[in-house]
Image 1: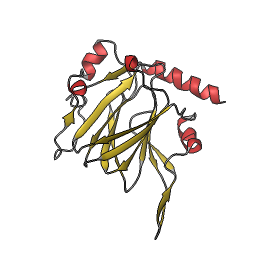
Image 2: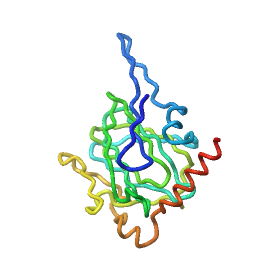
Image 3: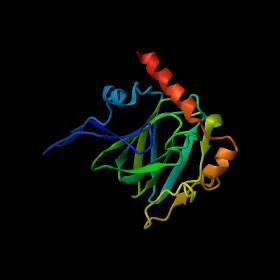
Length: 202
């Protein structure tokens, strides 16, 4: 398993080694020790989610209050999605930057995003099945959304797929409005959280 840092700080693409023969394929899609080497601490596993989406469905951009927020480890078990990480941490050197990673049931890559980052994906196939491990349980009062079609963020979703959004995501504020309203996490608070998580494991 290899990890590749993304253009957004504190996010990684994970590339598993696949072993295929006439019986099928085996791979390690998650390794706590390898991820901890890249991130600086293990991922605390508090919840596992699975979503099944029709083609065009866009989920996100979602994030949670810091602390404790919610780190995520995301992969696609069936079909294909475009997975997007957005740096929404005020004061971050990569604030407002995003990067997209193709996740599918062929290459079987994964994405890790640290607490405080925004997350979204678009289903490119019907019945696209995404699973993600989370460091904290879902807490509705701490959860927020940004509009995934915000032109100032400028995510380049596939042009040949019509985006299908929930009412919540469609009505979500832009990045600029969320920043003005004080909804976004601060980079320094996130870095302090990462340091505490690393110190707890040393």
